[in-house]
Length: 319
Image (cartoon, rainbow, N blue to C red; front, side):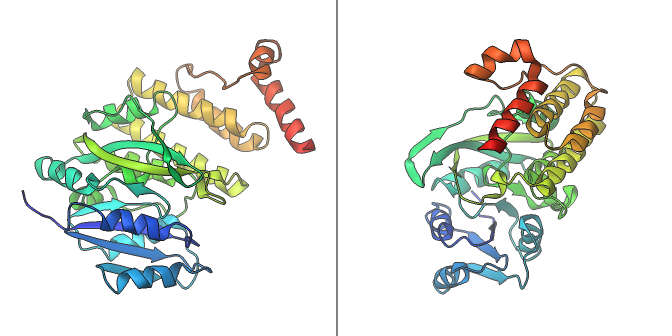
């Protein structure tokens, strides 16, 4: 087996609590030809100090941003400093199993025009013993557009960067991260990247450990700016797929994405919801149902989802 250099790129902002664990999960890899590039995005905590201690002993390049530029721009900066033939982006609070890089490298060597994927699951309260896999229908080798449709089918697409390894030639073909985006920037990036590949090849022995419940995490931010980012990411992602193929399967997957987004942002972001609806009207009727449980599920047939969301919003506002 050849041993191409793998560049693992980690953007971090105020990550003193987790960055050591993330770096250690890379240092524990059974595959050794790895460079670690950490982009410290103007952290105000001990992140720089912690990474510096690692860099004294290991092949770690630390770049310190003078001002906060965001995760997407930091990943681009990391890529522009990377020397590897294989690129792996990893968030600063996530972990991968020791065999992940090596097993994905084998598949890249056999499939140089393909993106390599893997398994993922969540753990809570910083306790890895709570880890559980989150199986998806797309956990298999598929043609690129089929993988996207499968991933989007139930509007629960997971494209956390640490799941994938990408040959450099595909990164060059697809382009870098859109620096305007924050929330679900990974969807836009991996949609265009995967659709620049021939296939997504599934790696059975690669697992991402996704840390859930992190305070002030980007995925948990529900600001106006975050929703604007999510809308733009969805718009770009669905357009990219539909420019590749416009059959009923692709359109149905896009419809479910837009519908779930509208469910989530109504009634606090009515203007963004209206723009999302213009996309939805061009697509087949979505099959995804409004997520409701308990009393909400009982009330839903009588009130409809819009009234139910308004009542939930008012209740939340009072508390």
